Length: 71
Image (cartoon, rainbow, N blue to C red; front, side, top):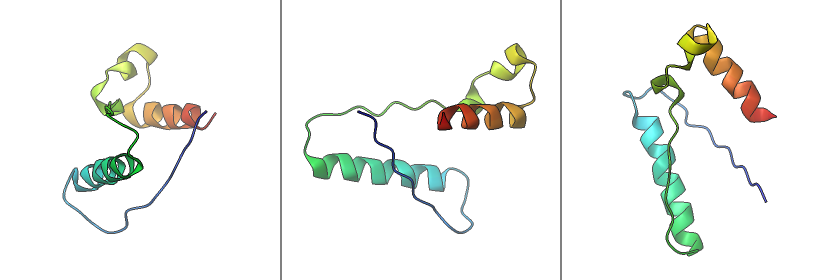
């Protein structure tokens, strides 16, 4: 099965603070569920050089990957 959960972080923060908050919430949820050990794997689009392969600028690539994620 596939489950998805969304939440928003509002306000202005230093770089990567909201990202770390997302990971903190994820760890808290998975720990509270007591399902056993777990591993979190990150895939950061901006660190992949797919834009050179696809011929798209970074913003267009992020938009495309976001649209694919919805499918």
